[in-house]
Structure formats: structure tokens, C-alpha cells
Length: 81
Image (cartoon, rainbow, N blue to C red; front, top):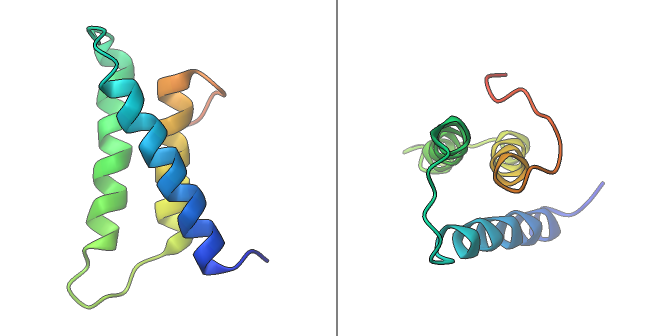
């Protein structure tokens, strides 16, 4: 099993790639893609900001990976699981 630190580093890397893609300067008009990307990222952030400090690294990792896959068309994912 990967250490939590390594998993967080990978999540951070995916998030940076998403940010870079969003700021490329190209107009992003594919709402069918962008809405689920934003939804997945919002859910990940919402889980991380739990006021009791209880969050699921598996859940956050899954949501960021889904957002990354959707934005870069890397694999088909079910965004509403």
C-alpha cells in the first residue's frame, strides 16, 4: 500500500495538471465535460474541508482522478458513483 504522503503528492500533481489545462488560454466550451470535472473537484474539496478533520483519502483520490480523466479524455469514468 502506498504511503499517504505519496498518494497526496500524486493527487497534487493531477490537480496541477488540471489547473494548467484550464489556464492554457484556450476557450473551454465543452460544458458536458466541464460540469462533471468541476463537480468531482468540488466533492473532493468538500470532503477535505470536513470541520472534524475526517476525510477519505480514497474518496478524494477517486474524485481528482475522475476529474483529470474527464478533462484529458484518458478513460471513461462514471462520474456519479
